[in-house]
Length: 211
Image 1 (spheres, rainbow, N blue to C red):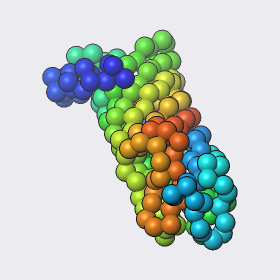
Image 2: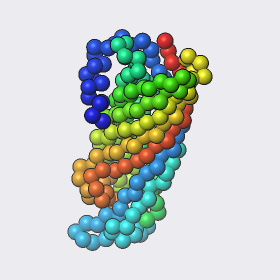
Image 3: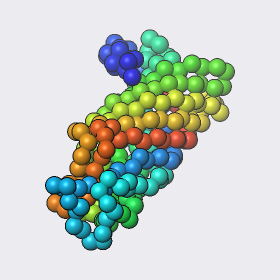
């Protein structure tokens, strides 16, 4: 994360880019738990019934789909800056007490990367800053858009100079405004136990390098 801001500053001095990497990837998102919330120390009255306040509400791990566009620095081809969008459709566990448990989760980040080429392999580390949109489908809940970030590592494998295989793993924390109730729009039953909600994503995809 500490290297992200200097790379962003350098971007203005380094463009136009030598090349642009465009990656489409499929992955799997591992999601943390939420909680059953309570109001005024009383269990929420909803139908179907929820668990006890403080009980964990699992958010299903689910498939995800991502687009990454990375611009190569003219002055240093091992550095990149770009943007990353990832989407998953997941569900709350039944004890959330929701008539519709579905939720869409989208993250949009500006990213910076450093490459360490070794033959046909291109290992890299990355960091990013942006926003996470959590969009529950149940009518009792509202959308939440919060500041989120990412740190990760991976590698590319070059089939040709233009076509590459990308594999990476990312930690994506979202920073909610303090622990407590979230998604509330009347009758809310969901809470966070801390300020940070964590997700882990593993991806594999194909990259095309425009030169």
